[in-house]
Length: 356
Image (tube, rainbow, N blue to C red; front, side, top):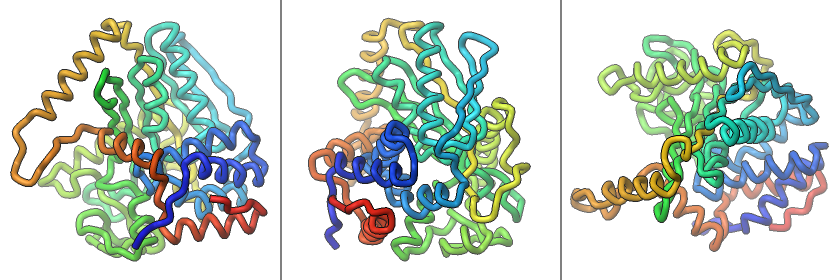
């Protein structure tokens, strides 16, 4: 079935107007809309406008997200800081924190910012990639609240806790890692529910820890996802350890508490998040041109590796997303019919014309 395609600029404008109707300031609405639609541009629909109505708008309306936060910053050293997001919109808090990391890196070579009391900030790559125009390496990660069953447990204990690393190159696309520390991101489960598809075996478990392919068993049934690796034989303990490492940097280092120990209001699961951001000035190590040439050389060497039958290209992290973004900026962003319907409905409720 041919999906409706919309212009990315118009989609950003529509999303901005929706948020403004909820009382978000124009500046903050523009930041949030850009971050949301950037996920759709890069083909990560699980973190884009599909979440606008059912997740972000509803949580603002219910008071789970503070649209006028008093974001504060404290610092004990030139390269480091803690930001308290005052339960603000995660996109806005994340943008502010990554900007702070970049500013500090510009002054002293590296900037590291831990964030507490924030909310869901979408795709972590958006923030890591903010460092690229500054000839810096960017790092972003977030806790997400318990939805993953630790190995051997039959209860949720840790979040999907994504990690992103963005590294500039020269003529080649930037290396952009963006991965959950679980087998799959939680948004992929929502996407399966929306499309009426079963989950691949090995993604999720029911509320007793048994393997399930029913996406409803994850959110509505009290089940959860598995750590990256899935089984002891495939390295599930590594995925669990990575998830805990993210919580240490995001939750503990920021002065918050681990997601397992937090009290969450009914219906607000996955809303409260803490983050960690970093920016590294490349010219503190090597001339930027030298570094980018070495990145190109490395990327091209991977591309040149012999390929198994049926494989045309070897892709590094971020290359497929970059190609998708180039295409969608020209051809438009495809919207699943249920997503476009949700946008039309929320636009009608808030008096924002669906003019896409």
